[in-house]
Structure formats: C-alpha cells, structure tokens
Length: 143
Image 1 (cartoon, helix red, strand yellow):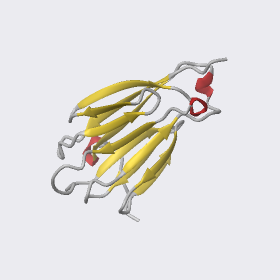
Image 2 (cartoon, helix red, strand yellow):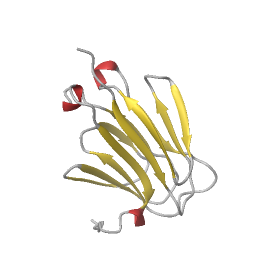
Image 3 (spheres, one colour):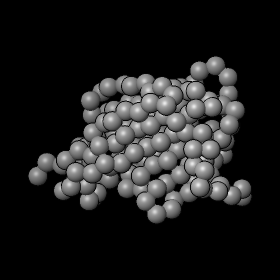
Image 4 (tube, one colour):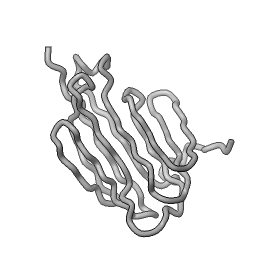
C-alpha cells in the first residue's frame, strides 16, 4: 500500500521581525521562501518515503529582537537545532518552541512518522512561525 501525503501548511507570522522563512521540501527537491504574513501548503509523505521539510528563518541583517514561537502539530517527528536556549512545550495536539531573541540561527527538520495514523488517512497540519504575541491566550512561564 502506498502511503498518502499529509498536507502541511507553513505559515510565516513574523509581523514585528518581518523575516522571510526558508522551506526546503526534500521529496520534490524544491526550495521556497515565505514572506511575512504569508503561507505555503505542501503535501509530504511519511518518513518511510524519505520525505521531510527543512524550515529556517532567513538570516538577513541584524539579530532577531523579539521572542518568536514555532508551533508544530504533535504528530510530527522533528529535530530542532539552535545556538541559544529555548523553551520547549508539548501540550495536547501542539508542540510550541519559544525561541529567544538573537541571531536567527535555528532550523528544524520535520517528518511524518513512519507509524503515523496518516498512512491510511489523508490529514492536514500546520506549522506556524510567529512573534510571541501571536499566542495571546498562552502564558509562557520563565524557568
């Protein structure tokens, strides 16, 4: 049985920072740049088909001046790299990564797990990268 694709919508909500987001789709070998307040929809196959998305903020001039949040669906597997400290929160159906101001040197490699229930169902998820104030109902506690 061939695995179905899962639609992932990558949204750039960096309104204060106005940075572009780089998205590389491995299966199609395609690169995309998403400008501020824009989004992109991609269909990705489960990890058994060696498909993944690689997402990062464009490095551009200067440091990021504000906290930003990376919001992921809980059903994805990912590897996150960052040069600084960050807060990782997994709650229910979402994973939130609160990334501190500084150089935009983080990146994430995201896959649909090989044993995902989405093998037999067509699903959809979204990834949002945005300013911390995009999550007004959520309080990020300091350690």
